[in-house]
Length: 500
Image (cartoon, rainbow, N blue to C red):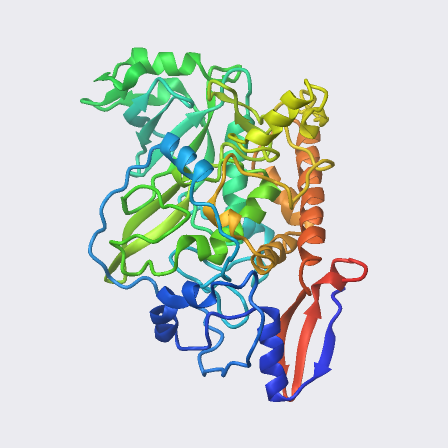
């Protein structure tokens, strides 16, 4: 049962209490808020975390619920991003200074308004298990009653696969589990996408599909990308080559992740800092967006270490007579217990994942200086692997939300402040045990014991996140004025945290 704390305050006290909970970007109309955003970061520079110095006036449209960043714009240019360059740039440059401003795209309650980046879902309302499990789905997956037409393919790379068009005309990208690790990556991609959708992000529709090689036909003129990036006309030989590398069922079929092509004109990834100069709607520096800072908390929970620019998309869409950019998170194959090996092939997650950056010199120096006596603590962590081989490597005992790290430095993650983390932790706390188990079940694991292990692990990691981040701030929420009474809830009490 939720506990509620009430306190009687005058109107001035109400304003002050709200500012104490989460400093706003300004109590203004939607138009005024967005016009002022360019200078917000500069005005707030010098604050490690914003502290209220004045009571701000509230306007009739506070708190802002929708950021209207969907005004019609000209088509922006396409962006190509080198994965290697992204690693180097973020590992050696663009680090935060001593002064980090508060997030600039929040309303007077410290919440993130709906926008082309984020749509509030489980954080602001109850979601049924059916809605959680459905996620972003609208097609139900590819139509397998008729032959699938292959229209593109690659036989080399981390995940050999192909692109198909079904009888309805829908286009799907198909990727498979490797022979050595059945169910590993296909389950993770479906599960994680549904979690991130419930949190509020734009994600593709991912489905598990059982593909019969005999139910595939190649469209004339289709080319395949082979080793070295070369292209050649595709034939059945190339399909056979792909299917020799993937996990197969006893009847010869293969389990795939079928990701529906996102509607719109795909323009490449977005970066976790700066703004797009060719998108007039993109006025909040990405490193100061709360949903990108708080993304670190969600990634830590789900161990999504591959949360980098290369796994994002800007998509130019048309809606209601307007053309604008929507921003997506994609490719969750390196999350939970799944990752890649040194050859960048799908494999159980590396024990380093979440514990140390890909490029981090001090641990190596410390080991060398002690002649190998000092060992990285994560090297001795025990995993339930290979007992739960289809889950991979993920655990909850050693997991520390405050110390978790992505594959390499992320400008938005590095600027996450306690109020950003609290916002995200509130959303994490909304996932009940039942909801977590229902979402894990969508991975369609073969062993019920493995499914239960992953569910329990995520529940324990959730509880650690709540404990860590609810203790960093005064965890009050749910503010509302009833007559002359300001009502609010103590999330610390609800979570059973003593002394919070």
